[in-house]
Image (cartoon, rainbow, N blue to C red):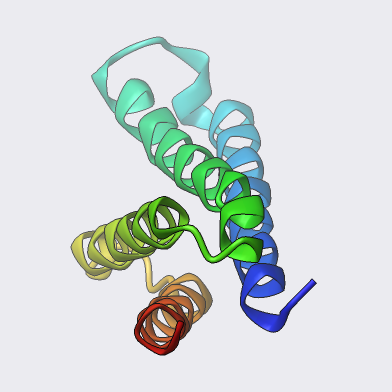
Length: 115
C-alpha cells in the first residue's frame, strides 16, 4: 500500500466514523425526539460525511493502480467535504475534517500530476 492510498483510506474512515457518530448523537438529543425538517437536515449532515467517506474508501484500489477515475472521485469528495465544512463553519468549526480533506486534496493533485 502506498502512502496516498493509505491516506485515502484513513480520511475516508474518518468521515464515515464521524458521520455515524454525528447521527447517533443527533438521534439521542432533543432533535431526535420529533421527526421534522430540522432532524432531517441534521441527519443529512451525517449522511454527507458517510457518503463522501465511503466514496473515498472505494477509491483506494484505483489509487493503488493509479487509475484516473479514483483520483477524480477521491478529489471530488475531498473538495465537497471542504466546501461542506466551510458552509457549516459559523455553527461548527470542523477543523480536523477540513484540514485532513485539504491535505488529501493536495496529495491527490500532487499524486495525479506526478504519475
